Image (cartoon, rainbow, N blue to C red; front, side, top):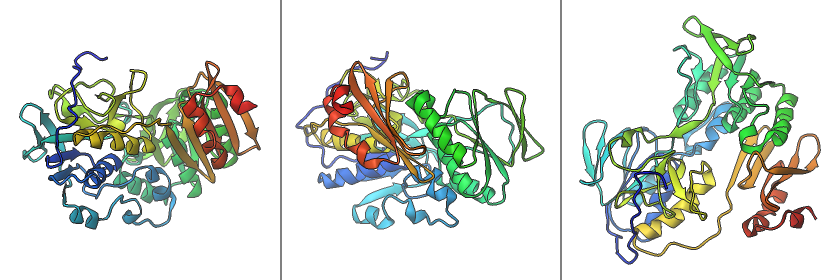
Length: 408
């Protein structure tokens, strides 16, 4: 366990249904845990504090529907309408970034200097996109994490001719697909041998490369970006192999880091996210964390931070009862995530790793299905455009079945 994290006991049986709960964050984790608290008959005050001016909203569509549709209504990504929060007596402090937490005084400080007290604090601040420090301050360079950033990129894409996307992870690949839908020429730059190679391995990454090239994307692997040039606005990108690419847009998709800077000096244990036990309790009493920002202890005793949409619901289902003094539910959770690229939904069940043995069992030139083997058992399944066959493997993965049970 990381240094500085002291084990503490969550006292089951203590009734905290009337406790004042402050939730910091403006995404799925914040909205879902507030909803779960009210469903669990929590009657105390609930306050959601967010640095965004928008109602809590769903982020996965930002690189897909929000980006490539001609017109988009914010209501399409809003998780709950304003009426939900009013009817459930949930106070929203929007546009109010949390800047510090004092766990001894049980208070958080907001950007305007306001101090807000809590009985229980739930941190759900998510991620911050990584940027390239060497890139100049030019118009046309974008990261994609917020609704406003997605809208700004969409506006510029309407008149852009060519975009360079730096990084071929899930965000980079999804943005590439969306921009191609808008008839923007796309150069996708990735230092690894294939897109998604560090997550799904080079073999499946090659199938993703094939998909993008079939849609007209210029995929450049094994190369990075050396320099971005322009006079006030992006005009050219110089790659690490010396190649120069003209560009109107540059989208940086090189990953994200947990949004924990505001916790400096709080005493909370942070190590690749906020360190939590297996129910979301942190190193400070009555402080909890979930979602992308949280590193939970898994069933094997290791710390794991999972950046999947579906993980949030599972964590909320565990955290809320324990916060209220009840026993946590028992469940075997099989991680699941997906990525929409063109007309192909890439889905993953389980925990595949890049160095697993990969068995591609179906491949029609565009759609595919592959099983991941580790130590003789099925560790995961990845499919492109094969939703039924992917989901069918859930029970086998949960049971740790031998790979022979899948391959026949």
